Image (cartoon, rainbow, N blue to C red; front, side):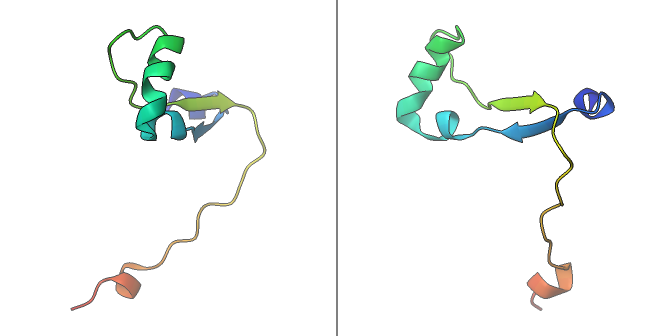
Length: 63
């Protein structure tokens, strides 16, 4: 929320966390030792982008 209040944008960079073989190298890079990284995010200034398209709940809930 603080990033948004400062006018910053954010994006998830998930591959280093989701690919098990990359996790140890990422942990070493940021000094986590034997701990497991859970998320990587980048922050910065960027132009506004449109929100992802969403379907209504009626379109996806079947009774």
